[in-house]
Length: 119
Image 1 (cartoon, rainbow, N blue to C red):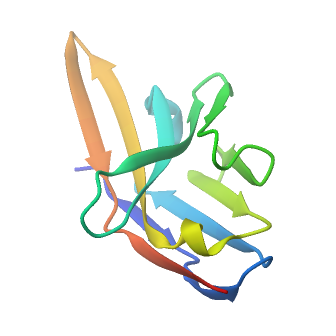
Image 2: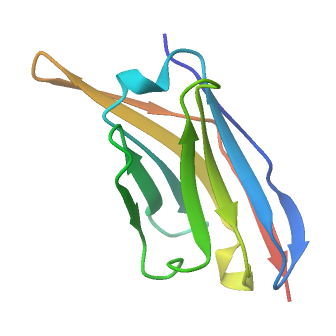
């Protein structure tokens, strides 16, 4: 069973930075895509950033130029570097990974880490 463990959340002032980490229990190279999502109470979970096995990245418009997703295959870890944080970035951030195998999609989620940005 794949496990994803997030860390790095916390409280930061607006304009500050945080780096989130998502450590996988197995090789991240087995996943087609890994990504970070966030959710605030009462709203749907939204994609923040994703990275494919080949290294192609994708970002939500709201974080482009401020957040950077990266992966370290040797450490089986995906990172989200968050700079110039804004109060509206406050949310629970979830790591996600999925892979396709014989036509079946396997979707995995971490437990989430709280990010709070104070104004």
